[in-house]
Image (cartoon, rainbow, N blue to C red):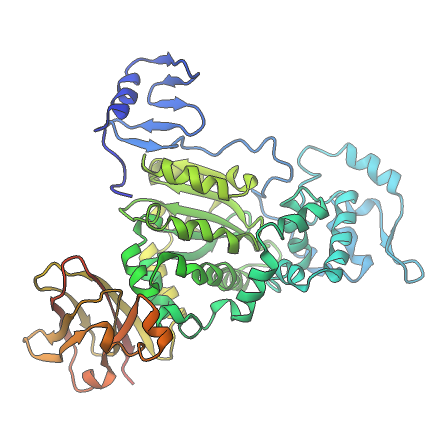
Length: 540
């Protein structure tokens, strides 16, 4: 994708820059320029240095015309936890004014409502925003009827539908899950089922479910050659941390730092990384909700099955060029989890992002597009962040007083370790240039190396060794090549365009004291990529 933002080198760019010199100009296409902004859909902003950012309007689109808009404040909690969808007597709590009527079972038949006329009259006079929100505790009578019908329909249809709806249970209450899916299609049941079949979701869901949504990451994805999830996350930096003021979990994605060559070393091709999307959508979200439920006060906090998402495009990732096939495929997984986006911040969007956005936008549900705001810098987004996220829940990387992105990533890696006793991972991509290249790492007195694995797609030979600070060879020079890879002994493995080779085990470091070490490479064809993963363990 190139640099963070494009300089004004092209002729078209110069025209835009020159146009900003006047206070206001109109163009033949209806575009109006005031100051540094072009006011139109898909706008650009020019900063004081003449740098152009795509769509950097530093605000969110209006949601005034959106039915059932996303929650911006905390939902009711303690009383809603008492709701049992099987017990009609508890259901009035879901209404926006439960005191006006009751729901009771008559001779074992469907629940019946009393005082419907009185309820309808009162609902019509309620204050704006208190009815039709589509959230439990704020439902209209009609919405509640729809919820109950939807629940019954789920029992009759493909079991995959109910599994999708209840995917965040028990951390997301059933009433919230039902409402979330219904809000995605304005409480029209058949439209919800149509949405859940348009991308063949039941089949995709069943395949991912049978694989455990790739929880046993390093053992269930053959193309990854045993790569642990924490290693993959160094190349695809995505973490959950904290909760919004409305109860939505917060997700951070440093899209600009996604290392496509590193991912290709692990997975062969970017599109093969789709299981990661399933893992994070299912296990990542469930684990995040579990953490927040555990630390929240249930009398004041309801953790939602929704996300406030921060997408940071700062960096030089090729995600929106060579990774475009992955981005096109990912919505197939995301479509099984509708209405989970509460609010999305896109930061540091460069001019070149406009090309990718034209494609990506077509793959995103229109409701979701209305929840995306573009900001040219972190500083310009911070004030909006703090409206929806408490400072202590917002990472310090993005203007809060919480921990940094790097600190949380290290925590998540520790939580997701592929075996007991792992302390951390040191991962570095080496791109051969026909001469020697290297990188270093340190071990404390309490640490040792569990393994060193090299992932690559290269058909050429690269010689890799490890020496200590005195130049003593700890790992002898090893030829890394496809033929020597530990996982290339079957026809299926040989047919893959990537491989993994373990060049060191714990035995190689058993007698090695703490200190500094250097991983050296030599030979190799210029431009070949090798991803070296050092797994550091706690000394027993």
